[in-house]
Length: 220
Image 1 (tube, rainbow, N blue to C red):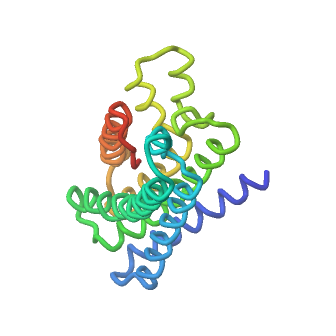
Image 2 (spheres, rainbow, N blue to C red):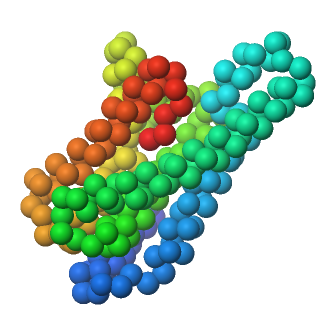
């Protein structure tokens, strides 16, 4: 019940913000909010790098490297995770906003505010990915709040497992915020807003599944 109340308050706050955006061209405090989201993403990826999540390639070479070389490889991996954290935020905040800006007549700043709200569930999901992997040894595509676990139990091909692993409750939460934002700001029909929102996520999920299939680190 408490979580339902919090969710309702969050959606009401989102609706109020979108209503204000319809009436005003200037978005106050946007830079600070975006900076905070970038820092949050950076911190989450830094923590994952600190725990060595995704560093199995380096660990496999431990017997072939000296201590100094191994520590250097670990440091470079951690720096790479920091860069990935910044790219992750930039893609979700700016690239998605640009996608919506291309297909609508809404201002880029207004769409960026919507993305700032939609990015929060994604960050929460990233935190849970770390916890599930550290505590239970579950990869991101095997968590119970995604369809990847169902695909694994059905012995689906690897690419399908990775693709469906991207389809999670948190992604749906994020897409719902984007859907409402497009409806409010651009005055789009339900079908058009759903198609525009779903299309960009399907593209990202396909890229993520392909990167994971070839054992490259996925972003999305």
